[in-house]
Image 1 (cartoon, rainbow, N blue to C red):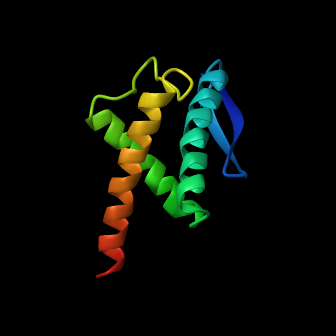
Image 2: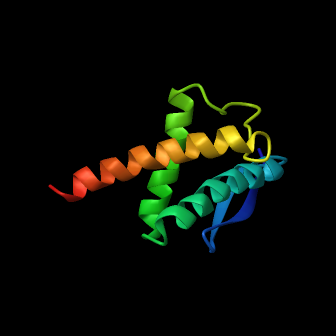
Length: 106
C-alpha cells in the first residue's frame, strides 16, 4: 500500500500527516473543519496554548459525536448550517470553559 504525506496547518503550525494514497483531499478537508473550530475558540478564549486549544477542539468533536452531531462519512461544516453549528460550538465551549475553570480552582 502506498503512503502519502499531507501537510496541514492548524493555528499556524504545519503538521505532516501520513495517509493512504488518494486520501489527501479527505485529510485536508478534516483539517479544515478542525481549523474552523480552532479559530472559533481562539476568537472566544484567545491564544491559550496550542495543546489546550487542540484538546478543546477534541472535546468539542467528541461532544458532537456523543450528542449525535455532525460526524461520520458526511460531516457537516459551519457553512452547511452556520446557526446550528455556532450554537453547538458555543454550548460546547461554555461547558469546556466551565470545566477548565473548575479544574484550575483545584
